[in-house]
Length: 281
Image 1 (cartoon, helix red, strand yellow):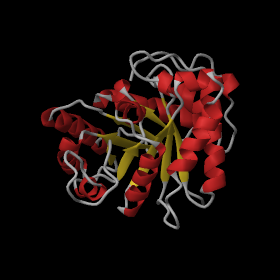
Image 2 (image 1 turned 45 degrees about the vertical axis):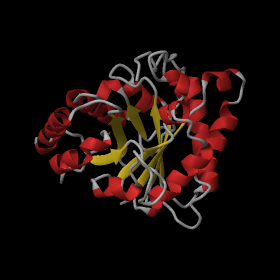
Image 3 (image 1 turned 90 degrees about the vertical axis):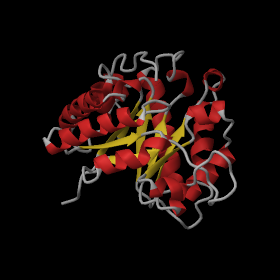
Image 4 (image 1 turned 180 degrees about the vertical axis):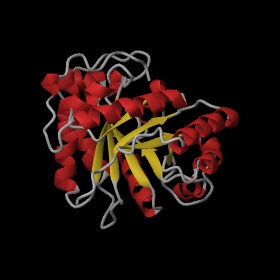
């Protein structure tokens, strides 16, 4: 029997949580796993601040919850003040690394070339890349969404050479749908972005397992509809999962929705109404 791929569900804590707060969150997740409260269909992941990686790693050891870094430098160890390398975050317990989030692209000026370097470095270090792609509001208004997404995905993979990740995660997160000023995305807009990502992955990484996630104002009120209504392999959540009970509640909602989703049945975004409501990341 062919194993069913897990449904990815996770959160980046961004610049939140002291060591004590991070530890308490991780302890709550461990308790839920040990109590059998995490649905087996769902693969949880958390991305703490770099300062908390080792502590969270120790608390989550053996739980199956994946641990990731929010960022890492593509270069080897060396004189790069304020940065951490891929090998450093792996040594601290990360098995995955987030690359190309809208914050990094807009606030820190990360280019497609920098993101491609990071993806290649992550794979070389044995980390699973979680590549974030998304268009700005101006790009969408100008009708450039499909071109932008295709360029971002294709460029992110352009320096892998013969190396391939064990599994690649790509999260479609339109810039205009996240953050305090985010605009609600329609089902059609989300479906369009996901379809472009899948098309490019099929063309460029046909032999490599890849999961396509959606992020952008995901919360308890819309998670189930996102799962049942869209061709999505996971959800990347913001504030709604910044507490362990929030993440666990989303896991249960996603699992219930997955059980209602017939195996191999195409998901139809037209069946979903108002699935993305404003809930700032």
